[in-house]
Image (cartoon, rainbow, N blue to C red; front, side, top):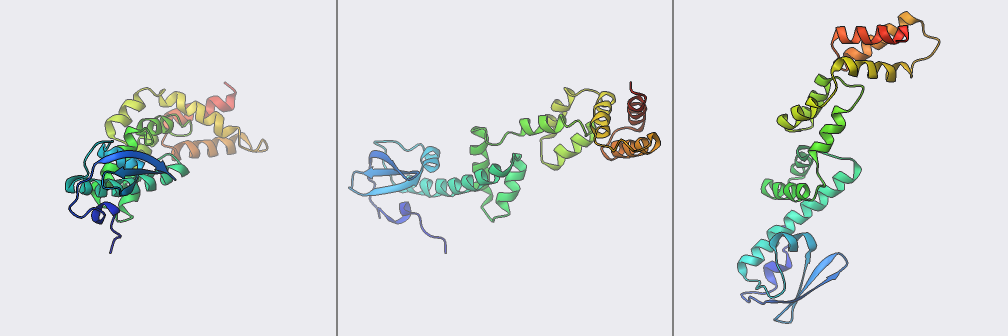
Length: 215
């Protein structure tokens, strides 16, 4: 059985008012008119909009309990984002995999989005700017990561043509190849690499042949 939050049992049928709000070890400490105290997370306090002078009645206690669940999901989401930037879809999927209620997850995602901790637009730009990926490959990566289709297309519209992109990719890939390779071997490897990255054959051939000619 899930542990009850203090707001569920601390006050019985009482509805005290918040006299003062302090902080302790990352928690908000509510000093109440019935001389009791209640500790809540800062996120939960923010979500319910509770402030000095407000009454903590049964409805508010219920909101606090729900907000604490959201706060816990937010903390889990922040830890996920600490390792690497993730899209809203990726965070949502991982939180749901932890058996967190879907409504709680959506509120947590909204909170993270509002504070810029999740930013799909920035991830889309980063994917789009990858010099080793074609426009189509970048589109597939965004789709796989759950980036909104309209946002993906808007981001890709600002990208240089694949013909220019192929030339950049060839320069980056060619610089890593052993100098001892013959031109034929380099050509084959470069064409294969560009094909795997989704570049059209004619763009790849033009880029590779131009690179090998030194132009």
